[in-house]
Amino acid sequence: MVSNSDLLYLLMSRKPWHSLPQPFYTEPDVYRADLRNIWQQDWIFAAPSAEFPKTGSYITLEIGEASVIVVRGADRVIRAFHNSCRHRGSRICAAHKGTAPKLVCPYHQWTYDLDGKLLWAREMGTDFDPSAHGLGLVHCREIAGMVYICLADQAPATDMLEAQAARYLGPHDVANLKVAHQSSIIEQANWKLVLENNRECYHCSGSHPSLCVTFPDDPNLVGADDSTTSNMGRAHVDRCEAAGLPAKYLIDPSERWRFVRIPFLGKGVSYTLDGKAAVSKRVGNVPFDNAGTCLFFHYPNTWNHFLSDHVLTFRVLPIGPQQTQVTTTWLVHKDAEEGRDYDLKRLTEVWTATNDEDRRIVEENQRGINSPAYLPGPYSKVQEGGVNQFVDWYCRAMHTALMGAARIAAE
Ligand code: 3BY
Ligand code: FES
Ligand code: FE
Image (cartoon, rainbow, N blue to C red):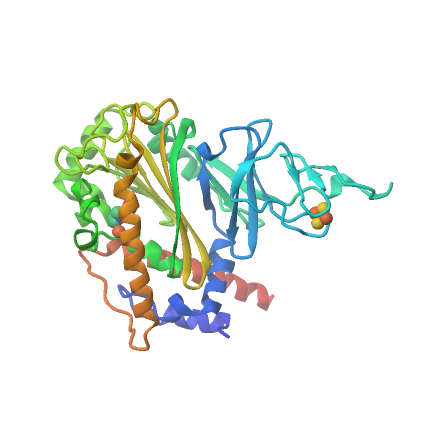
């Protein structure tokens, strides 16, 4: 059993600019601490708004033991509820997604409105108060066409994120796109290895032949640094900003999220094998085809790419100490028609391959870490600033939460 003080000791024993000690990637107790201190405290990306096209469109997602329903109401508002019936606790929705006019529990058919109110419960007697048995609310916020939930009693503030997401993502009009494709894969690795792998492109040239056709693996563009430290990055940022398209590297003071718009290689404008657009209709009001990709991550569970012709969202959810789900959603203009404006294979093949390549890398990373021979190894200062930035964020977040728990216990 790893206690909070063991965890604090482990955090303190982390060597700067080194991968984490083994238990962070292997131990069920550390995994539970991650759930408690990070996943149940922070805003978690649930889905792009496009996954809720109609009244009653819903998804369910699991964060540790918590099962959550996210649903669009008749008033168009997207809300989140605990997927646990207020009668005897049954899960209400078993499906991962669907459309339902009401939320009906399969056990005894207690029926809830899309805003969580209990509408109907059979033979519960005259003293039963339905208004005291609505579904448990989970914080839910739609920010620039992306829906986040938070399981904490008090959710962290989002004002700064909202203001910046409106600037950077507004031109892509994300709320008005449609889902062209979605894939969900399971990776046999701890969730932190999935995030770490995303935060560097040290591995890109060796592993991602199709991504590297257009994606620059320059660490100044994709790492922890301001992209304008590279000439290519500076020229791109200047051109976009001059056209009114926010592009400058911007990181939140707590380093939980970051926006930056980077160029594609050469004449590339999209993630395709010939570098040309995958979709003929541009999204939102992005001013030109070669606007590159706006990279946005929000820890602990999402990274995203906003292009001129499509948008890619990635959602990471922990399933177990060494198992993680990665869901990728391809979004296109809502009037774009498959076969006319885009070819689905062409739109999805680069990231379908890239995701599978990353899955293999991350699974081998986990297997090697499980070996008794594993020792934390050094990050490249040139290439792995982003990994270090993520791991530092994680250690700070855990440290703050553990110190808070110690204070409460002492009171
Ligand atoms: O998906 C991404 O944003 C990252 C950037 C570097 C590697 N990977 C492609
Ligand atoms: Fe839901 Fe009984 S547990 S109706
Ligand atoms: Fe990769």
